[in-house]
Image (cartoon, rainbow, N blue to C red):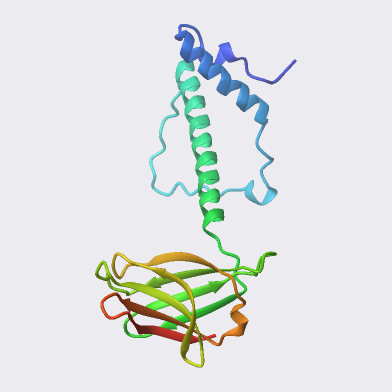
Length: 203
């Protein structure tokens, strides 16, 4: 004789066809999942822990309520599964494989630059996370430079920010950062075409 509970015995009669079909699908999923794993021996003797808590009379759910409870449990499990998948996908898409990290900081701004491994085409991915920078006029913007002995040599990328809140950007560059010994974020002034250093660091 099978120990599998009969669907009709659980939910009874009188359900709407749509609800019955939905609950029956949930029932089949739970049966397919099988019983939970055995309780470990160390958890078999659980302290009573009643204290002064008043013991409540057991409540027996009607069969129709049991079916609704099964549906709710399955819905919660599904939400947890989908939520975990979405969270995992977001985490995966936001990760950056880094082989070197450089911090740039002063009283004006703080920044972290991550260098990824060079790809087969010879490009080096970079990720910049910066905060503390102010929003600039429409004609100005910020520039991330590679420097040699404190002097800007090549541009990694240019960017804008909405304000001092954290901003993350990615730049692929077509050269080997090992050929330089510093980084600099500068403000490019559109009126006089001058780059004013904001924050820098050695590589």
